[in-house]
Image (cartoon, rainbow, N blue to C red; front, side, top):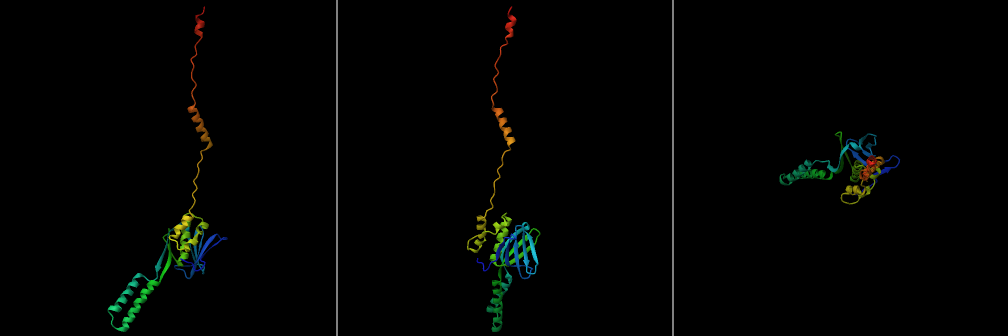
Length: 222
């Protein structure tokens, strides 16, 4: 995958990431995706836009769709077969053959990259555009949902331009979220109490020495 223009950039002042040259289903013209740690905003030149909270996104699917349905290609194949097997008239045969080939070619060349976003509210939003731009948007949203900061989510996206296999997994492996292990210390008062209690339990008890009562001798003397 290769990028033909600069489609993603970050702004230090607004602390966000922008991806342009996208198209939103239902909006006229191109839109710009503005991403921060809480919100995905899609805005057209007219000012109309769509705002989606990051935590409300439950699925992001990056795939390819076709403008011409598959059954149109099947009809085209049927017309081509009919022109060869059934129609004998030269003019009708050529017309049927050209019509069938047009339908097949239309199905083949209208394949376009698509990003589908489903939300908790049940909404489904379709974004189309450059495959590289959609892959960047998908990767940033994935990393934000995994707990990365916006700066970390936008870092390392240049690997998407390479021919590496599984580029998104490679980015996640290079930018794993560090997990700090909390060290629980025992309170000093409890430690002192336990140490003194143990010392008392192991201390030897004093031995009792028998003492002779000398008063019995005094009573026997004259």
